[in-house]
Length: 99
Image 1 (tube, rainbow, N blue to C red):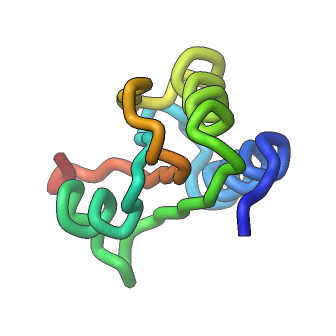
Image 2: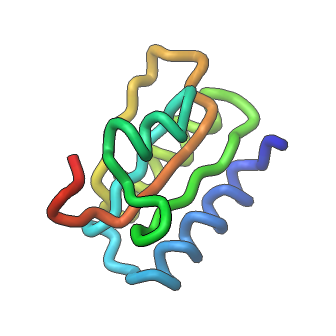
Image 3: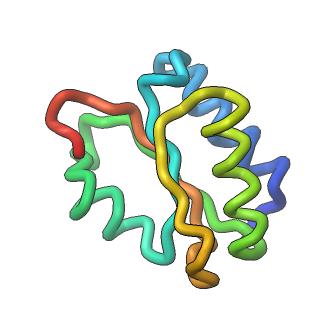
């Protein structure tokens, strides 16, 4: 189920706050396949790392949420605004073993 921008911002914001709220230690991105991004590309440990993803209503909404975290709160991350399939926003706490 797709969530609104406000719902996604709140979910990710509180996830970060509850698990070590230093924004620069977190990576926020968008993807068409968040599972692949989190566990294959970034090598997140499903059981031991802190991570979250949410489905947005559109790629534009996902891009706006991502922009909020990167440019307003100072998280690390990247966005490819050219891919209309990127409707998922994901975040994880960076560790030394992460890409």
